[in-house]
Amino acid sequence: MRHRVVIPCGAKKADGPRRAGQFYLGSYHKQCLAWARSNFEEHEIAILSARYGFVGLDRLLQPYEATFGRVLTNEQAALLRRTSLPVSRTALVVGGKRYFEAAQSVLPRVQWLTPQMGLSKAGLGYQIQWLKNHRGFLP
Image (cartoon, rainbow, N blue to C red; front, side):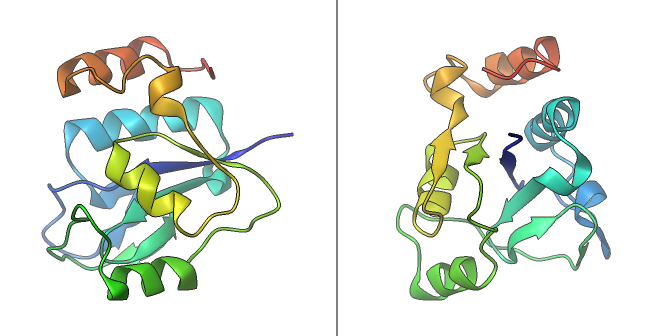
């Protein structure tokens, strides 16, 4: 059975409206997306956005400024519940601890892949290199 994968959004964003798959411009997000695309179908990939919640790659997004803090705000928790993914499959999360904890707060079946990749304590440069070198590899 195929899983659904959740990747992080990013601080660097497009200046105007774009589809989610082209909206986030940072290196880490781009490498997470490229890795996810090498392992999953487009419809199996979701981005966890601090402003929009869980979004598919084809969703039209407007520019915004928001981040996940150490603790989710009540508004963010409600947003995540409203936009939650289908629960029939395990959601695999690639990204930092805050993104995993945000996803875990609303998804009954979630698995954090970053530690399984040996990346939980690695710097961003190392993580980006790993993602580039392991396209098509699912731990």
